[in-house]
View (cartoon, helix red, strand yellow):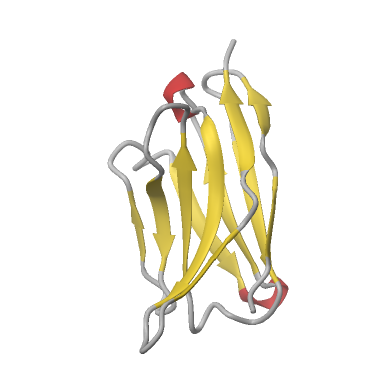
Length: 118
């Protein structure tokens, strides 16, 4: 069982920055792929950043150059640094831990609201 606890969401002006945190219940990052997803009202949940167990990263085109995903293995925490925020970044952001093997293991955080508005 993997528990994920998110924090760091809030209200920010366009062009501002936020740093989201996702604390995991154990040392899982060598086994699980960690991802950040977001879901805006009336839209599908979409992946925005991925950090694989092997250490590679990838980003949605809409956030490349502005968002950075990182891990602190000692603290069992994954971060999403969001810079130059735009109104279209407004969404609920979710942390995800996933392992695909004989049986898929898939865990989600509770979500944290990010609102970008002047």
